[in-house]
Length: 168
Image 1 (cartoon, rainbow, N blue to C red):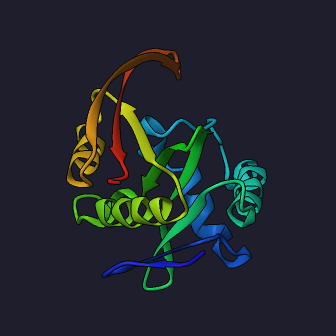
Image 2 (image 1 turned 45 degrees about the horizontal axis):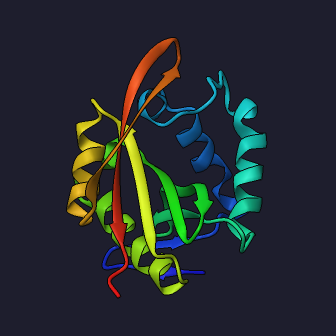
């Protein structure tokens, strides 16, 4: 359940992560691109964190916190699991953007998922989220023909998808 990369540890959440996780779930910059309810205060986000913690311990789901020096800086989670394919969502604290941490985490998770028997990992992002698209490309993912239009916070966003398939 624990993945170690060059600089990061990816693992299930623990209760001691509560404050850091609530900071992530209520961060206004994160909420622009990662679809979250508009939590006003930390207490409002607590039930979601508790649910994510449960899912991170559940072998039928894939939820992992991203840790740098034992400090939670982001997470990845399954969005959909179907026919050997898994779609993931991810986020990282804005003050850690641009340092390669998300790419490193995504590469580690893709490898772990292939080791678990998945044949394809899919991720998506709003079309204007260039940083997230760069993460997917740097992780060796290929753009899919799939496009969605998703309403989020009163705006229609075009969502693009990328995929990496396990090499046989």
